[in-house]
Length: 350
Image (cartoon, rainbow, N blue to C red; front, side, top):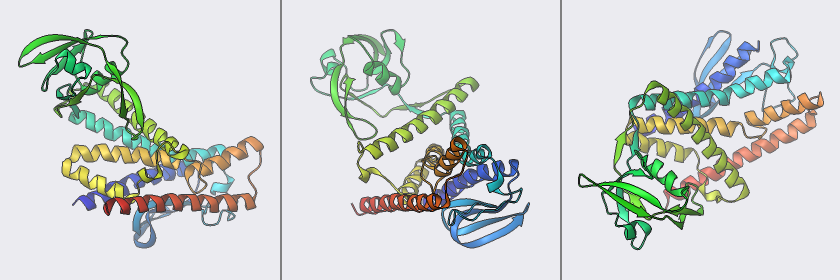
């Protein structure tokens, strides 16, 4: 069941990405020859609106083949009015951006649906208290609930952590213990910890861990829109930052995951419930949007780069340059896919 859900989620996100390209191409008057989900041999296809719609054997991607565009041979061009080649660089960039933009829109819609369903969020309930930490010295105990910090009401663990990490001086905590309110004063201490990218960082902390208690967020329509927007921006920023750290070496290459990781994590999310599937689907959708914007010639970002070059210089790159950069792009892309697959297999084998 988990494997089936994984493939359906991935195929749906790829479909919406390619639908973005397809819609923008048709708006710009470009003839779309093929709309395919998957690569390789076609297992099913039909023709509608002049386009062949197909499902191929390898469901790990997809493509929209427009008249005059062929990544396998960038020298193939068509000068017909309904060709991709005869459109202005700005029009082509619009078509190229539409795919990643569709993924960001899908992610926003998924986060919006999550917000409507009342997402679970970690409550500010204390689990473990480190010995000799500021919290230990102040007398905080397991199962204490932090109600406010410096008269600021606290409803989530995230709010509490952000206030502590950005604090200056001592903090006045209002806690609930066994139905009674108590007041504690403590001063956070700069402590070595790891962030979401597994990097060692210095951060102000008080020495407590979460008890794992969660509650549902009850959001109004305005708050729901804000939640969806914030989550989409956060996910995009996180993936951009992760890629940057991977490129400069702050995050080791072994952290890169491939399609096996995506399938496994989606399968795990399925076991945890449909809300988890929606969360992970939104994250994958943002991931697809971000990755396709990378300036690699085999991806949308690479084609955008070529068109920006044409806009600035008033002439297209030479055929020789296009061929060399496209080959280099495919080499980089397949190398990254190979590395991700290798890491996946290594993790599975322990």
